[in-house]
Amino acid sequence: MTLLDAQMSFLDFVQNQFVQFFEYTSFANFTVGHIVMLLIGCVFIFLGVKKEYEPLLLIPIGFGMLIGNIPFFPGLKIGIYEDGSVLHYLYHGVQNGWYPPLIFLGIGAMTDFSALLSNPKLMWIGAAAQFGIFGAYTAALALGFAPNEAGAIGIIGGADGPTAIFISSQLAPELMGAIAVSAYSYMALVPVIQPPIMRLLTTKKERVIRMKAPRQVSKTEKVIFPIIGIVLTCTIVPSGIPLLGMLFFGNLLKESGVTKRLATTASNAIIDIVTILIGLTVGCSTQATTFLTAKSIGIFFLGAFSFIIATTMGVLFVKFMNLFLKEGNKINPLIGNSGVSAVPDSARVSNNVGMEYDKTNYLLMHAMGPNVSGVIGSAVAAGILLAFLK
Image (cartoon, rainbow, N blue to C red; front, side, top):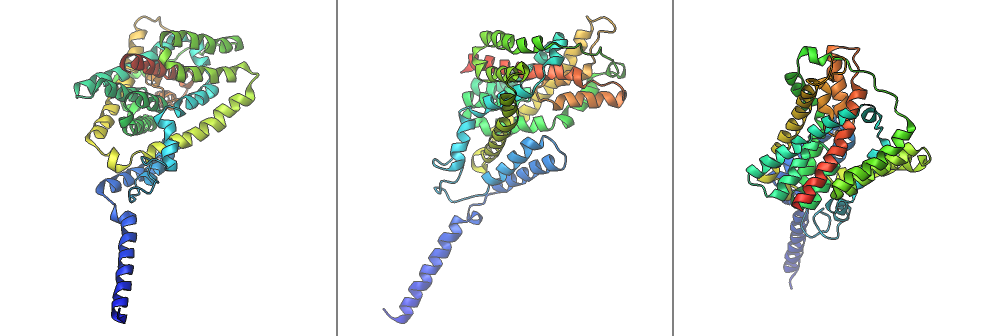
């Protein structure tokens, strides 16, 4: 071999190495879809940081979108859908429904059900808001989705991300990414979506209705409630045990007064860790090659429809209840929106909109009744869907 041949062989080797290196970079694997999802991830982070819309959810999900949509050469075991990758193993908690019950444990340990216990009729507002779930289920069926897919999509109307993940993991795992992102998106956009609907459906006179101060709830009532709650709800809907069982267990840890360390761990360390994992992995699951489909876009619009129905039915149901309530016992319809289980954001929206019309009319504590009822209601609705569709 001549010196020239050796030089040419070396140059070919170097060229081939550079070509191979380029093939392994993101630049060689970028698609328009990846760029779109990266931009959406940045929007999520912007909404979380600048607007403070559910930052504990939108920032992990948005950053997860960035991680999941940096293109890579297949087979490196780094993608969330590749066996053997770290992200894939972390995603098992979403795919198999491990994370949502742990979230519910933390929610139970930080939730005070006093507002509901002091005025039990507010429970019906939370129940009415669940019509959004079944309305979206019907619409999804009409659009050609399979019954199990329609059930998983409908749960978005409950504005409960963990429940949406749990149901989709059981009924439609292939749609989980789109359903989870839709659910969390609408949870975060509660302050944007709900106020116009509330104003449209109420009169100025209704918006300034003053409600009686909630009565004082005894410790005995608070301790007994999770015990009665688990027995009543789960005997009717046993398929809701994973969510409702953990919710009421967490609440008993809080209200018993003798397990403060466990309640603190559940409401702080556990829920924070799981929120990080669930947000990040759900964001990563929006990998453009599997996420950007016609079904995903349809799910996003059905989620909006579901959320609007839930808010509308909550407000209208309060107006219906007021037809049968005496003057002085009437309910302010502005708390009807809080029947969706975005705790406590939808209750804050009730209070904020109410104060626009009367700065001394505080609705927050009243709105927390339907709000926590909505959490239970969405879990019960999830159990019903599982019973019928799985």
